[in-house]
Length: 443
Image 1 (cartoon, helix red, strand yellow):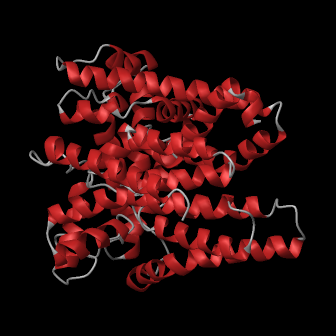
Image 2 (cartoon, one colour):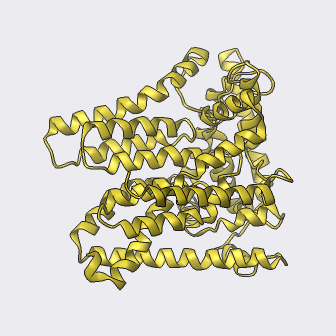
């Protein structure tokens, strides 16, 4: 394999950095145990004990897709919790390597670009931190990057098959594959080929993806009588969409709005549905009721909903991964729940971080500089695309997937939701500078 020495060195450096951060910063106080880690841990423990994909109380787990719990459960069964995280860190160290190959997928002759982009990603704060968190981001990105590499390779049915196959595994870690598969199939229908070839390519993509997710859909159907991937959507929309709308319209505290909606309104709808059906509701039925309730708030106040959606999408694009460091240190202000939240409030907490640790301040300011630099490089790439048809075509090819991933964050904006599409920012941003500085060489 070409460049194997460079790739080995890249992997080694990536692993070394992530191992040091985990061992010196995250492991001692279990800072890797974050947010929804408790749910993953409980289901993984049940799996390791041979009880199947169940919650801590023994009930069947439907809340999330099972990929990450299965990953943890397998290594809990073989080893223990720490080993599972170390295996994840090991796998996370391949992400810069995949970014190297993704760069070559778009610019096959530009080895320097691939090397610079991959080295940059090895030191990328987001990929470093989330490699050690007990969360799905690392393993999702691993399969999602493989999907991108195969999908954007020169067209052949073999590449299409493997792209759908990898997307299927990614869908088992984060439930966004059902949206990506639709967009990807539409993109294939726009290929410059016969209608039969386009239809065949779309079919290969869909069935290779469906081959992976089918067993989970079938399991849920056999247990409930419904086909679904997870039941998180309803509560997610209520908490992140309906609650902010209610809070702003009624000028009340977000937690007060959340209690009023989640306990009073949702509880009443659940009770009514259970009375009609004469039995307790399945989780998916509760999810459907919650979704309809949340969408009712969107329909009643569309302009507030659109404003919040735009805010969250922009927040996803410009938020810093340093917020995770501030959260670990206990300085994270919950802006996503605050009344009267503003972009200035978001920016101020990073320009004037409420922490005395000089090292943390340096990390924050360096990330600001690097983010602004990458975004400016993407702007240069955008300008260059007007004078280079190849660049324009590349930008148009990735836009549907990038736009989709940003749109999916409209309910809640976090920097981590940008991780799957961060390679595009890195690759295009660096190319933008190369196009400007070495325009004759890189055109």
